[in-house]
Amino acid sequence: MGSSLLTNSSAMTALQTLRNVSSQLATTQNRISTGMRVSTASDNAAYWSIATSMRSDNAALSAVSDSLGLSAATVDTEYTALTSVIGDKDSGLTKLQALLVEAKTAGIDRTKIQADITQIQQDMKLKANSATFNGINWLSTTATTPTTFNLVSSYSRVGGTPTIGSITVTTANYSLYTSAQGGILDTAGSTSPSIDTMSISALTDSAADQTTLDGYIAQVTAGINSVASAAANLGAVKNRLSTNTDFVKSLMDSVDRGIGQLVDADMNQESTRLSALQVQQQLGVQALSIANSSSQSILSLFR
Image 1 (cartoon, one colour):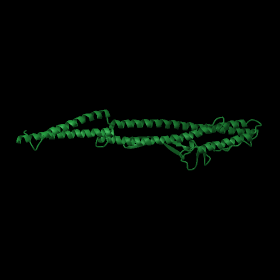
Image 2: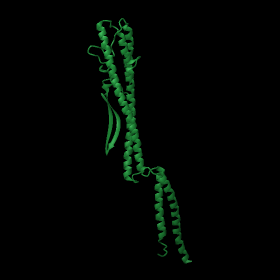
Image 3: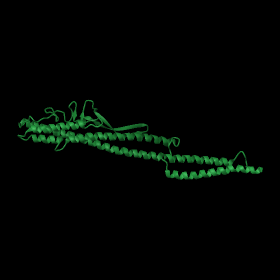
Image 4: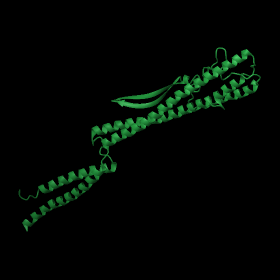
């Protein structure tokens, strides 16, 4: 084809190539600046949609992790109070049991022993009343206290259906004192007062009173077993919450890695591509300049 003043095929080809290189260069620069090869739906609709859903799931898992932390703190508060109520040789039900055994000694001053028992009774009630976290108390309950608590423990989504797992805690299993006096420590027996109200100051060395003391000792022993069982149950819940917390955090990390596989840019590849495209852009500009200068040679034909 001869030289044409109106149509410069070489310049058109060079311009098209330069536009293509510039477009690729803009894409690469965007990936480098954002760190993502799929940052919008237009980059890859399928991957963007999957990544968006997975980010939503991770936000839900983060909320579950926060809830697990709150639940763990609540359970730990109740567990600490329960173990304190069980006590040791110097406090709690354990000390109370020892005092009652001591009270069976003939001729002992039971009034003085009762002074210690009263202090222990008040101390145990104080600990139960103090076992409150975020307004929740399972040891000292009222008529408005819920019968069960659901502790959020997991989140999963299959298709478009989310599932939230929870650990159900039954308040009655841990109540030491209730407004209706139906707790472990304030429930009276058929022929004996509750652990919370029992008194030995009026008892003597008579056979009948010794039998009464035996009943008190058996009642306190049963109370220790009940409170220990409640503490063991809470200990199992604590372990489960701790395991779930670790699992949720690991799951969140796995989801993050999965999202990264879908949308993150390979910076090594992009940096190499950037250098190559910059060279191609410079060569494209020079090629276009050469192609545009070819029309200048037409002027020489008219000199």
